[in-house]
Length: 448
Image 1: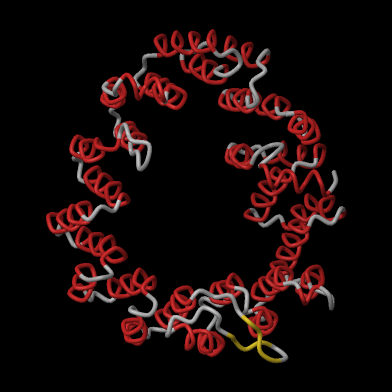
Image 2 (image 1 turned 90 degrees about the vertical axis):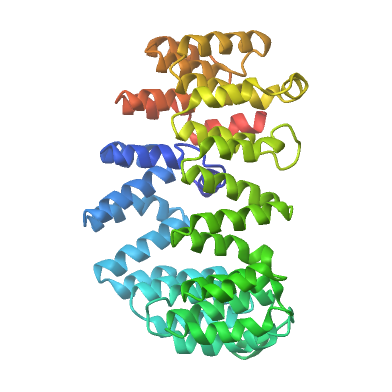
């Protein structure tokens, strides 16, 4: 185990990937996760095991799992350990693990993690003080608002936000906010600052004040209209929301207005708003109208709304339509959609159309047909379709044949499919063994 391997795992979801580790946890494979974390230095296995142990109140054992990762200085293990110690009541010991030294106090990231531990320990005022010198960073300002939620410190948070918010009201981007030891130049977007300020007012029960604050600044900061629309919707100001959706800020407000109308059962009005937006030419509104019609059970209409895009390079909603039909249990209809595409488009995009077709054949129970098509693809493109063919073989009940194919495959992700199939059949230890070690995966990536 070393820091380079651990950093690589986190960057590329390498080793035993997070989804597999979580699946093993869900299947009760705690001991296998612990063993794999220890023997192979698998961080995602350790993290999943620690989550299970903490949920069961086994904090000391969770710390033991983290020990080797802490020993090499893996910061995420250090932070997990600190949090667990705080939960145990070993507050000073836990805080000592993440308390920044003099140099660390200059790091916004180090201070963010220390502040989180302080909040866990109930020392919110100290957390605020730790973050204050770094409020020039937009993500730290967001962290301040997030960490203090429900901690009865909103008045203090508003006080810290106020200098930035005041300058943001006239659209000024290069605001300056208070910081320990003087003034610090900030890089906040006006809309972000005002959205945070409004959020704090709202959670204090002062939503009307937030509305009065944001309404007059829309002309100077038009991108705040989405937050203003949310406030209006949350306070039942439907008429004001309607006016916003019909005016110069329609692009930001129409979606929220349509959602509110649908929530209130005013379905025809909601649909009218979405169709009006579509006529205005916003490509995102075509997707929203499709989703709306699908929610109402009007799948065929949803497909027709998307049809003008199905053979376009930009704003293509073909895959959205296929997904809507597939989730609704209509794979045959989705296959008809694919079969109806023009020959020129299919020839130009065959590389991205084969997979959804094979997936739909599987969903429709047409395994033999899918297997035959996958084999034909392999003949044309050796090593490119092995995992898909193996997946189809497994669905057809031919598990051993699928595993044999994967073991001889040179396809990059063959080991993932092998592990998935083995896990599905309860062969968890074999599934873990099928995944190359982190060092082996890194070497393979370097060769590529």
